[in-house]
Length: 199
Image: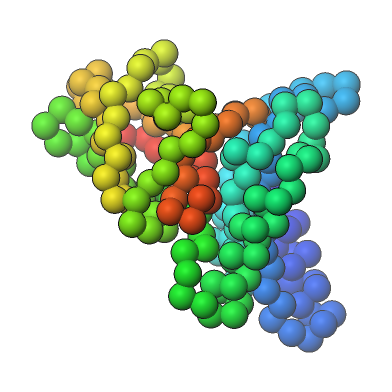
């Protein structure tokens, strides 16, 4: 019920203030454990947050896939999150012509034995950060596979014949409790987590 509760909370606040208040959402940061137990439905909460941002007017979301802490639900590195929320406000509320939204996978295609993933909100190019820029972290298809990949302006090309030959494959990126995404757009905003079924 997360999306329903969040949507109704936004509507309640707007009704009380008698104004179409803009809402900026911060996606739930990666997290492994918190106090006595593990929480295995964090990916579902992130999906619900995206649903609200995509369906409720004047509501936008930024990503936190590089800023979590495995043992703390409240990440200590606040600066990049504050900067990304500020970009959302500048772009959507104050109408500045800037790149302010996280990249999102919008389409796929298979050609010449390669899988093409198309994204919006990239800018002129993707960025890879972190210790290993030769790997797309937390990218999987349910198998332990080392992908050969290429990045163009707004496309990730995965060279993996197994994907192209399978009847059905679910591609996942940043799905799970804890992860450290290393793929960004030109404004250094991490790519949205996603899962796509390819038939």
